[in-house]
Amino acid sequence: MIKIALIGIGYIGNAHLSALKQIKNAQIAAIVDNHEENGRKAAQENNTKYFKNIDELLKNSDIDCIDICVPTFAHAELAVKAARAKKHVLCEKPLTLSLEDADEMIKAVEENKVKAMTGHVLRFWPEYVKIKEIIDSGYIGKPLNAFCERLAVTPDWQVGAWDKSEKYSGGAAIDLHIHDLDLLIWLFGSPETVKASGILTPENPREGGFSHIFTSAQFRNGEAGFAEGGWSFKGAFPFTMAVRVLCEKGTIEWIFRAGKNIEERSQAANIKLYCNDGSTETIEAKQADPFFNELSYFIDCIENDKPIETASFKDGRASLEFALAAIKSARENIVVKL
Ligand SMILES: NC(=O)c1ccc[n+]([C@@H]2O[C@H](COP(=O)([O-])OP(=O)(O)OC[C@H]3O[C@@H](n4cnc5c(N)ncnc54)[C@H](O)[C@@H]3O)[C@@H](O)[C@H]2O)c1
Image (cartoon, rainbow, N blue to C red):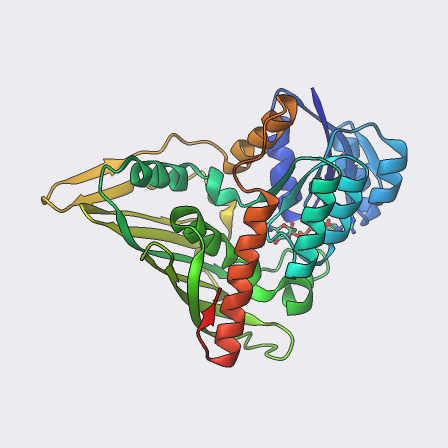
Protein backbone atom coordinates (compact mmCIF):
# COMPACT_ATOMS: atom_id res chain seq x y z
CA MET A 1 0.00 0.00 0.00
CA ILE A 2 1.47 3.36 -1.03
CA LYS A 3 0.77 6.24 1.37
CA ILE A 4 0.19 9.50 -0.45
CA ALA A 5 -0.29 13.06 0.83
CA LEU A 6 -2.37 15.38 -1.33
CA ILE A 7 -1.30 19.04 -1.17
CA GLY A 8 -3.88 21.56 -2.40
CA ILE A 9 -7.51 20.56 -2.27
CA GLY A 10 -8.86 23.02 -4.84
CA TYR A 11 -10.20 22.35 -8.32
CA ILE A 12 -7.67 19.78 -9.52
CA GLY A 13 -6.90 18.47 -6.02
CA ASN A 14 -10.52 17.31 -5.84
CA ALA A 15 -10.20 15.54 -9.21
CA HIS A 16 -7.07 13.77 -7.88
CA LEU A 17 -8.85 12.91 -4.62
CA SER A 18 -11.74 11.21 -6.48
CA ALA A 19 -9.25 9.24 -8.58
CA LEU A 20 -7.08 8.24 -5.61
CA LYS A 21 -10.13 6.88 -3.78
CA GLN A 22 -10.56 4.36 -6.63
CA ILE A 23 -6.95 3.15 -6.55
CA LYS A 24 -6.74 0.00 -4.45
CA ASN A 25 -3.02 0.19 -3.60
CA ALA A 26 -3.10 3.89 -2.62
CA GLN A 27 -3.96 5.24 0.81
CA ILE A 28 -4.69 8.95 1.20
CA ALA A 29 -2.52 9.42 4.29
CA ALA A 30 -2.91 13.21 4.61
CA ILE A 31 -4.46 16.29 3.07
CA VAL A 32 -2.52 19.56 3.20
CA ASP A 33 -3.98 22.95 2.35
CA ASN A 34 -3.11 26.38 3.66
CA HIS A 35 -6.81 27.27 3.48
CA GLU A 36 -7.48 25.68 6.86
CA GLU A 37 -11.27 25.43 6.63
CA ASN A 38 -11.22 23.71 3.21
CA GLY A 39 -8.31 21.45 4.16
CA ARG A 40 -9.77 20.33 7.49
CA LYS A 41 -13.17 19.69 5.92
CA ALA A 42 -11.69 17.53 3.14
CA ALA A 43 -9.52 15.61 5.62
CA GLN A 44 -12.49 14.98 7.92
CA GLU A 45 -14.74 13.85 5.05
CA ASN A 46 -12.05 11.46 3.86
CA ASN A 47 -11.08 10.19 7.27
CA THR A 48 -7.47 11.28 7.02
CA LYS A 49 -5.02 13.67 8.71
CA TYR A 50 -4.89 17.40 8.02
CA PHE A 51 -1.76 19.59 7.91
CA LYS A 52 -1.61 23.27 7.17
CA ASN A 53 1.67 23.19 5.25
CA ILE A 54 4.29 20.82 3.86
CA ASP A 55 6.71 21.40 6.77
CA GLU A 56 4.13 20.16 9.31
CA LEU A 57 3.36 17.22 7.04
CA LEU A 58 7.00 16.21 6.68
CA LYS A 59 7.61 16.50 10.45
CA ASN A 60 4.55 14.54 11.54
CA SER A 61 3.42 12.08 8.94
CA ASP A 62 4.59 8.74 7.60
CA ILE A 63 4.14 8.92 3.82
CA ASP A 64 5.76 7.56 0.65
CA CYS A 65 4.84 10.26 -1.83
CA ILE A 66 3.36 13.69 -2.34
CA ASP A 67 0.82 14.84 -4.92
CA ILE A 68 1.24 18.59 -5.54
CA CYS A 69 -1.99 20.29 -6.66
CA VAL A 70 -1.29 23.86 -5.49
CA PRO A 71 -1.06 26.94 -7.75
CA THR A 72 1.83 26.78 -10.22
CA PHE A 73 4.01 29.45 -8.59
CA ALA A 74 4.29 27.23 -5.47
CA HIS A 75 5.20 23.97 -7.28
CA ALA A 76 8.99 24.31 -7.24
CA GLU A 77 9.39 25.03 -3.52
CA LEU A 78 7.12 22.14 -2.49
CA ALA A 79 8.61 19.65 -4.97
CA VAL A 80 12.17 20.42 -3.82
CA LYS A 81 11.17 20.07 -0.14
CA ALA A 82 9.41 16.77 -0.87
CA ALA A 83 12.39 15.37 -2.80
CA ARG A 84 14.88 16.42 -0.09
CA ALA A 85 12.68 14.56 2.42
CA LYS A 86 13.03 11.48 0.14
CA LYS A 87 9.39 11.48 -0.92
CA HIS A 88 8.39 10.58 -4.48
CA VAL A 89 6.63 13.50 -6.18
CA LEU A 90 3.76 13.95 -8.60
CA CYS A 91 3.51 17.63 -9.53
CA GLU A 92 0.59 19.02 -11.50
CA LYS A 93 1.36 20.63 -14.85
CA PRO A 94 2.85 23.09 -15.70
CA LEU A 95 5.92 21.82 -13.86
CA THR A 96 6.75 25.38 -12.84
CA LEU A 97 7.16 28.83 -14.42
CA SER A 98 10.89 29.13 -15.18
CA LEU A 99 13.56 26.79 -16.55
CA GLU A 100 15.79 27.67 -13.58
CA ASP A 101 13.13 26.36 -11.18
CA ALA A 102 12.59 23.29 -13.36
CA ASP A 103 16.33 22.54 -13.25
CA GLU A 104 16.37 22.89 -9.47
CA MET A 105 13.43 20.48 -9.20
CA ILE A 106 15.15 17.93 -11.48
CA LYS A 107 18.40 18.28 -9.51
CA ALA A 108 16.57 17.69 -6.20
CA VAL A 109 14.84 14.53 -7.41
CA GLU A 110 18.00 13.14 -9.01
CA GLU A 111 20.20 13.85 -5.98
CA ASN A 112 17.65 12.27 -3.63
CA LYS A 113 16.87 9.35 -5.96
CA VAL A 114 13.10 9.79 -5.80
CA LYS A 115 10.61 9.23 -8.61
CA ALA A 116 9.10 12.36 -10.11
CA MET A 117 6.24 12.88 -12.51
CA THR A 118 4.49 15.90 -14.08
CA GLY A 119 0.68 15.82 -14.32
CA HIS A 120 0.58 15.97 -18.13
CA VAL A 121 -2.73 14.18 -18.13
CA LEU A 122 -3.24 14.01 -21.94
CA ARG A 123 -0.62 11.26 -21.91
CA PHE A 124 -3.18 9.24 -19.88
CA TRP A 125 -6.37 10.44 -21.60
CA PRO A 126 -7.96 7.45 -23.36
CA GLU A 127 -8.55 9.16 -26.73
CA TYR A 128 -5.12 10.80 -26.92
CA VAL A 129 -3.50 7.49 -25.87
CA LYS A 130 -5.45 5.65 -28.60
CA ILE A 131 -4.47 8.21 -31.25
CA LYS A 132 -0.80 7.89 -30.31
CA GLU A 133 -1.06 4.08 -30.36
CA ILE A 134 -2.53 4.15 -33.89
CA ILE A 135 0.13 6.56 -35.15
CA ASP A 136 2.97 4.60 -33.50
CA SER A 137 1.65 1.34 -34.99
CA GLY A 138 2.32 2.71 -38.49
CA TYR A 139 -1.25 1.77 -39.59
CA ILE A 140 -1.78 5.14 -41.31
CA GLY A 141 1.84 5.79 -42.19
CA LYS A 142 4.24 8.42 -41.02
CA PRO A 143 2.70 11.51 -39.38
CA LEU A 144 3.18 14.73 -41.35
CA ASN A 145 1.48 17.42 -39.30
CA ALA A 146 -0.80 17.93 -36.33
CA PHE A 147 -3.33 20.54 -35.29
CA CYS A 148 -4.58 20.74 -31.73
CA GLU A 149 -6.86 23.08 -29.87
CA ARG A 150 -8.00 23.83 -26.30
CA LEU A 151 -10.60 26.53 -25.76
CA ALA A 152 -12.28 27.51 -22.51
CA VAL A 153 -14.21 30.21 -20.72
CA THR A 154 -12.19 32.39 -18.35
CA PRO A 155 -11.66 30.28 -15.19
CA ASP A 156 -13.43 31.56 -12.07
CA TRP A 157 -12.92 28.70 -9.60
CA GLN A 158 -9.36 29.20 -8.33
CA VAL A 159 -8.80 29.94 -4.65
CA GLY A 160 -7.36 33.49 -4.67
CA ALA A 161 -7.60 34.23 -8.43
CA TRP A 162 -3.85 33.47 -8.82
CA ASP A 163 -4.53 32.36 -12.40
CA LYS A 164 -5.29 35.95 -13.44
CA SER A 165 -1.64 36.95 -13.05
CA GLU A 166 1.04 35.82 -15.51
CA LYS A 167 3.55 36.01 -12.65
CA TYR A 168 1.70 33.27 -10.73
CA SER A 169 0.16 31.11 -13.47
CA GLY A 170 1.99 31.93 -16.70
CA GLY A 171 -1.34 32.99 -18.25
CA ALA A 172 -3.21 30.80 -20.72
CA ALA A 173 -0.05 30.20 -22.76
CA ILE A 174 1.51 28.23 -19.92
CA ASP A 175 -1.46 27.10 -17.85
CA LEU A 176 -3.79 25.87 -20.62
CA HIS A 177 -1.90 25.76 -23.93
CA ILE A 178 0.95 23.70 -22.43
CA HIS A 179 -1.27 20.58 -22.58
CA ASP A 180 -1.20 20.69 -26.39
CA LEU A 181 2.45 21.70 -26.59
CA ASP A 182 3.20 18.63 -24.47
CA LEU A 183 1.02 16.56 -26.82
CA LEU A 184 3.00 17.78 -29.85
CA ILE A 185 6.27 16.84 -28.12
CA TRP A 186 4.80 13.45 -27.17
CA LEU A 187 3.90 12.83 -30.83
CA PHE A 188 6.90 14.36 -32.61
CA GLY A 189 9.72 14.95 -30.11
CA SER A 190 11.29 18.34 -29.44
CA PRO A 191 10.52 21.32 -31.70
CA GLU A 192 13.31 23.01 -33.62
CA THR A 193 11.66 26.38 -34.29
CA VAL A 194 8.63 28.07 -32.74
CA LYS A 195 6.55 30.97 -34.05
CA ALA A 196 3.53 32.25 -32.15
CA SER A 197 1.08 35.13 -32.00
CA GLY A 198 -1.64 35.92 -29.52
CA ILE A 199 -3.68 38.44 -27.60
CA LEU A 200 -2.95 39.67 -24.11
CA THR A 201 -5.75 39.29 -21.54
CA PRO A 202 -8.28 41.96 -22.61
CA GLU A 203 -9.29 42.78 -18.98
CA ASN A 204 -5.68 43.09 -17.76
CA PRO A 205 -3.11 43.23 -20.58
CA ARG A 206 -0.29 44.40 -18.28
CA GLU A 207 -0.43 41.50 -15.82
CA GLY A 208 -2.62 38.74 -17.26
CA GLY A 209 -0.25 37.50 -19.96
CA PHE A 210 -1.55 35.89 -23.14
CA SER A 211 -5.16 34.77 -22.86
CA HIS A 212 -5.25 33.32 -26.38
CA ILE A 213 -2.28 32.06 -28.36
CA PHE A 214 -1.57 30.38 -31.70
CA THR A 215 1.71 28.44 -31.81
CA SER A 216 3.25 26.80 -34.84
CA ALA A 217 6.39 24.70 -34.68
CA GLN A 218 8.70 22.71 -36.91
CA PHE A 219 9.96 19.43 -35.48
CA ARG A 220 13.32 17.70 -35.93
CA ASN A 221 12.01 14.91 -38.20
CA GLY A 222 10.22 17.36 -40.49
CA GLU A 223 6.73 17.31 -38.95
CA ALA A 224 4.84 20.57 -38.47
CA GLY A 225 2.56 21.28 -35.51
CA PHE A 226 0.02 23.97 -34.78
CA ALA A 227 -1.77 24.53 -31.47
CA GLU A 228 -4.43 27.05 -30.49
CA GLY A 229 -5.25 27.70 -26.85
CA GLY A 230 -7.31 30.33 -25.13
CA TRP A 231 -9.48 31.05 -22.12
CA SER A 232 -11.03 34.35 -23.20
CA PHE A 233 -14.39 32.79 -24.08
CA LYS A 234 -17.47 33.88 -22.16
CA GLY A 235 -20.97 32.68 -21.37
CA ALA A 236 -22.05 29.21 -22.44
CA PHE A 237 -19.05 28.53 -24.71
CA PRO A 238 -18.24 24.87 -23.98
CA PHE A 239 -14.80 23.55 -23.08
CA THR A 240 -13.42 22.34 -26.43
CA MET A 241 -10.46 20.20 -27.27
CA ALA A 242 -9.48 18.78 -30.62
CA VAL A 243 -6.63 17.02 -32.34
CA ARG A 244 -6.13 16.17 -36.00
CA VAL A 245 -3.07 14.40 -37.34
CA LEU A 246 -2.44 14.15 -41.07
CA CYS A 247 -0.45 11.01 -41.86
CA GLU A 248 0.82 9.54 -45.15
CA LYS A 249 -2.09 7.06 -45.46
CA GLY A 250 -4.91 8.89 -43.70
CA THR A 251 -6.03 11.47 -41.19
CA ILE A 252 -7.02 10.83 -37.60
CA GLU A 253 -9.24 13.31 -35.76
CA TRP A 254 -10.93 13.73 -32.39
CA ILE A 255 -13.12 16.67 -31.46
CA PHE A 256 -14.55 16.89 -27.96
CA ARG A 257 -16.85 19.42 -26.36
CA ALA A 258 -17.56 19.21 -22.62
CA GLY A 259 -19.34 21.50 -20.14
CA LYS A 260 -17.94 24.60 -18.46
CA ASN A 261 -14.72 22.70 -17.88
CA ILE A 262 -13.44 19.13 -17.96
CA GLU A 263 -15.82 17.93 -15.23
CA GLU A 264 -18.14 16.64 -17.97
CA ARG A 265 -15.24 14.75 -19.49
CA SER A 266 -17.02 11.40 -19.26
CA GLN A 267 -19.16 12.19 -22.33
CA ALA A 268 -17.81 10.08 -25.14
CA ALA A 269 -16.90 11.34 -28.61
CA ASN A 270 -15.42 8.87 -31.03
CA ILE A 271 -12.15 9.17 -32.89
CA LYS A 272 -12.56 9.30 -36.68
CA LEU A 273 -10.10 7.88 -39.15
CA TYR A 274 -10.29 9.08 -42.78
CA CYS A 275 -8.17 6.74 -44.91
CA ASN A 276 -6.67 7.86 -48.22
CA ASP A 277 -8.53 5.03 -50.06
CA GLY A 278 -11.86 6.69 -49.19
CA SER A 279 -12.84 4.39 -46.31
CA THR A 280 -13.57 5.75 -42.85
CA GLU A 281 -13.37 4.14 -39.44
CA THR A 282 -14.89 5.13 -36.12
CA ILE A 283 -12.67 4.20 -33.21
CA GLU A 284 -13.81 3.96 -29.62
CA ALA A 285 -11.27 4.41 -26.86
CA LYS A 286 -11.97 2.40 -23.69
CA GLN A 287 -13.34 4.98 -21.26
CA ALA A 288 -11.57 5.59 -17.96
CA ASP A 289 -10.93 8.66 -15.82
CA PRO A 290 -7.63 10.11 -17.12
CA PHE A 291 -6.64 11.22 -13.60
CA PHE A 292 -7.23 7.66 -12.37
CA ASN A 293 -4.94 6.40 -15.17
CA GLU A 294 -2.29 9.02 -14.36
CA LEU A 295 -2.27 8.43 -10.60
CA SER A 296 -2.45 4.63 -11.00
CA TYR A 297 0.69 4.78 -13.17
CA PHE A 298 2.51 6.91 -10.57
CA ILE A 299 1.52 4.60 -7.68
CA ASP A 300 2.42 1.50 -9.71
CA CYS A 301 5.90 2.89 -10.53
CA ILE A 302 6.51 3.47 -6.82
CA GLU A 303 5.11 0.15 -5.63
CA ASN A 304 7.06 -1.86 -8.21
CA ASP A 305 10.15 0.38 -8.27
CA LYS A 306 9.82 1.17 -11.98
CA PRO A 307 11.20 4.35 -13.59
CA ILE A 308 8.74 7.09 -14.55
CA GLU A 309 8.94 6.97 -18.34
CA THR A 310 5.78 8.91 -19.17
CA ALA A 311 5.52 12.57 -18.13
CA SER A 312 8.75 12.71 -16.15
CA PHE A 313 10.01 16.00 -14.71
CA LYS A 314 12.28 16.24 -17.79
CA ASP A 315 9.18 15.95 -20.00
CA GLY A 316 7.56 18.70 -17.91
CA ARG A 317 10.64 20.89 -18.41
CA ALA A 318 10.56 20.30 -22.20
CA SER A 319 6.91 21.39 -22.42
CA LEU A 320 7.63 24.47 -20.32
CA GLU A 321 10.56 25.36 -22.59
CA PHE A 322 8.22 25.09 -25.60
CA ALA A 323 5.59 27.32 -23.92
CA LEU A 324 8.20 29.91 -22.90
CA ALA A 325 9.48 29.95 -26.49
CA ALA A 326 5.92 30.54 -27.74
CA ILE A 327 5.49 33.48 -25.35
CA LYS A 328 8.83 34.98 -26.40
CA SER A 329 7.94 34.57 -30.06
CA ALA A 330 4.51 36.19 -29.63
CA ARG A 331 5.84 39.09 -27.51
CA GLU A 332 8.79 39.88 -29.77
CA ASN A 333 7.31 38.77 -33.11
CA ILE A 334 10.29 36.53 -33.83
CA VAL A 335 10.97 32.90 -34.68
CA VAL A 336 12.53 31.20 -31.63
CA LYS A 337 15.06 28.41 -32.23
CA LEU A 338 15.36 25.73 -29.56
N1 LIG B 1 -4.22 18.65 -15.30
C1 LIG B 1 -5.20 19.51 -15.52
O1 LIG B 1 -6.02 19.33 -16.40
C2 LIG B 1 -5.32 20.73 -14.62
C3 LIG B 1 -6.55 21.39 -14.53
C4 LIG B 1 -6.64 22.48 -13.65
C5 LIG B 1 -5.53 22.90 -12.93
N2 LIG B 1 -4.33 22.26 -13.09
C6 LIG B 1 -3.12 22.72 -12.36
O2 LIG B 1 -3.27 22.39 -10.97
C7 LIG B 1 -2.71 23.40 -10.15
C8 LIG B 1 -3.78 23.91 -9.18
O3 LIG B 1 -4.84 24.49 -9.91
P1 LIG B 1 -6.34 24.58 -9.31
O4 LIG B 1 -7.18 25.06 -10.43
O5 LIG B 1 -6.69 23.31 -8.65
O6 LIG B 1 -6.15 25.73 -8.22
P2 LIG B 1 -7.13 26.07 -7.00
O7 LIG B 1 -6.91 27.51 -6.68
O8 LIG B 1 -8.52 25.62 -7.32
O9 LIG B 1 -6.60 25.15 -5.81
C9 LIG B 1 -5.32 25.31 -5.22
C10 LIG B 1 -5.40 24.85 -3.76
O10 LIG B 1 -4.08 24.88 -3.20
C11 LIG B 1 -4.12 25.52 -1.90
N3 LIG B 1 -2.78 26.09 -1.69
C12 LIG B 1 -2.22 27.17 -2.27
N4 LIG B 1 -0.92 27.31 -1.89
C13 LIG B 1 -0.67 26.30 -1.02
C14 LIG B 1 0.48 25.91 -0.28
N5 LIG B 1 1.64 26.57 -0.39
N6 LIG B 1 0.38 24.84 0.54
C15 LIG B 1 -0.79 24.15 0.65
N7 LIG B 1 -1.91 24.49 -0.02
C16 LIG B 1 -1.85 25.54 -0.87
C17 LIG B 1 -5.25 26.52 -2.02
O11 LIG B 1 -5.78 26.87 -0.75
C18 LIG B 1 -6.26 25.75 -2.87
O12 LIG B 1 -7.12 24.93 -2.10
C19 LIG B 1 -2.15 24.46 -11.10
O13 LIG B 1 -0.79 24.25 -11.32
C20 LIG B 1 -2.94 24.23 -12.37
O14 LIG B 1 -2.26 24.64 -13.55
C21 LIG B 1 -4.21 21.16 -13.89
